[in-house]
Length: 170
Ligand code: ZN
Image (cartoon, rainbow, N blue to C red; front, side, top):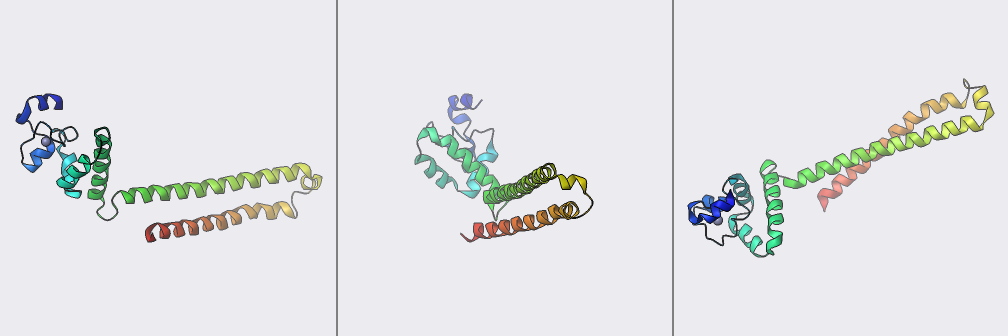
C-alpha cells in the first residue's frame, strides 16, 4: 500500500511530511519508515525526539540499520509518552524487579529442596530417627524450615532494596 503511495509521488506524503506540512520528496528519509497509514508512529517520535533530531540520527546511520533505529525510537518515544518520568527505564526496572523476586523465590525453593533431601537422607541413614520420630530432632526440624525461609527471604528483600538504590544512584 505504501509502495503504491510512493509511486504516485507527491499525491500521498509520508506520515512525517504530512505532520510537518511539507512536500514529500522522492528521496525523503522518513518515507520508508513512517508510512502514511501509521501517523501515530511519527507523532510520538516527533514529540519526544523532534523531527530534525530523528532526521539527523537516520542520516548518520547506514541504510540497513535505519529500520531498527526507527523501531527503537518509536518504542522509546511511546514509553516516554506513557511514563513521562521514567520512560522505558520504568519498564526495564519493573522487569528487573520481577527477575529479582522470581530469583528469590527460586532460591527459597532450591533451599527447601536441599533441606528436604537432607531430612530424607538423615531418616534413611540413622536407624534411631525411624524408631523415635516423636521426640527430639524431628519436631525441631519441623519448625526450622519456615524460620530459615523467612530469614532467607528477608535477606533477599534487603538485596533488592540495595540493588534498587544503586540503580538510581549511578
Ligand atoms: Zn516524507
